[in-house]
Length: 218
Image (cartoon, rainbow, N blue to C red):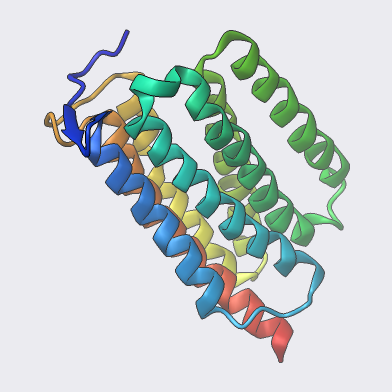
C-alpha cells in the first residue's frame, strides 16, 4: 500500500497514473542521453564505465516512468526492468570511480563488495517484489563510491572528484525523504522529489565525468 495519494487519469482509453513520476523519470532519462551525446568520449578504461552509467540509467528511467504510468496493467512486474537496470547503472558508476582507487590496499574489498551487494539486494528485490532493496543498494553504492571514495580521491588532488561529492551532498536528503515518507504535495510526493534531487546529482556527476574524459582525451 502506498503512503501517498496516487493520481489516476485516462488518456486514449487507457487507465493511467502518476503523471509526475513519468515526467521526473523521463527528465533524468533526457539528461542521461544529453550527456551521452554531448561528451566526446575517449576510449580510456574508466571512462567507458561512466558512459555505460549514463546509457543504462537513461534506459532504466524510461522503463521506470512507464512502470509508474502503466501500473494498472503490469503492476509491480512492470517496474522490474527499471530495478535491474538501475542496479546495473549503480555498478557502472561505482566501477568508474573505483578505477582511480586501484592502488589503494582496500581496492579489492570495494571491488568485490560492489558486485556482491548489488547481486544480493537485486535478488531480494525480485524475490519479494520490494523496491526498498533497490533503494538500499542505490544508497550504499552512491554514498560509498561516489561519496566516500570520491572524497578521499579529491583530498589526494584528484580535483575532478569534487563534483561527485557535490552530487552526493545534493542527493543525500532523498534517503530521508523516501524512508520517512515525506510528501510535499500530491504532485510532488517522495518519489518525485527524490527524482528531482537525483537529476541534480547526475548533472553534477556530468561535470566530473566531462573533466575526467577531457583529461584522457588530451
